[in-house]
Length: 257
Ligand code: ADP
Image 1: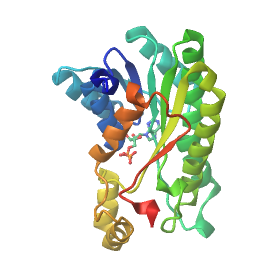
Image 2 (image 1 turned 30 degrees about the vertical axis):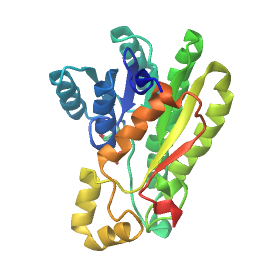
Image 3 (image 1 turned 60 degrees about the horizontal axis):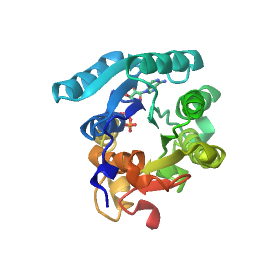
Image 4 (image 1 turned 90 degrees about the horizontal axis):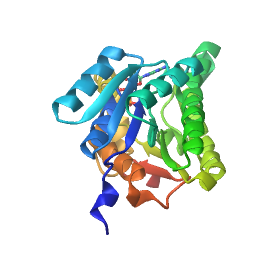
């Protein structure tokens, strides 16, 4: 084993939805592993806080505002990152939203919005950064965030979210095959419910949902952001050089039921 295989020294990483929760954790983890990190979010203040924290800890980061569902903004932000740090080696598509409603009450707007932010944005970023990686000819890593909803059905109100995450897995598998010849490795991380501020709020408002989440996780607890960071570093690292088209379940055994 080569220790350097687990480091990201001299790599340029871009993480979307990195102002909060899992994305913020991954951005900080990548910086600790040695990468320069573009912290992308539509909430610039949140992205700036994460970038500042990384820089205070001696890492390299910048914050960028981008609505990931807007193709023009995505192209612009990729240009900005390239100008500042250089071409992107590692892309993490993590930005996402949920708009819950029982299926029979879900509006077309709720369906379209979630599919647009969670799936189309990943397509926007994959193709924009992928083009750059292909032209450069040095391969690359793409990690798309899904969720266990790509494998199992979950509680009421999530058909739009689950469809978007199922789409992420299907798209990533095809991209992995299409871009294998360029050594661009495309993988997915599918976490179970992770204790982000959003989930914490949901559980506070609906304690029965917390019980339900726990009941489904054999390891007996919800995920923590840090549980996802190690797998994300691994998939970006040299150690994962022969893994592509894979969906890594980070779920405490949820889908093994
Ligand atoms: P999780 O950590 O579970 O992925 P969060 O809601 O904590 O969920 O984080 C998602 C991040 O994605 C937030 O920082 C949010 O601002 C960001 N985000 C959501 N939609 C967009 C968008 N259209 N463009 C850019 N960032 C977005």
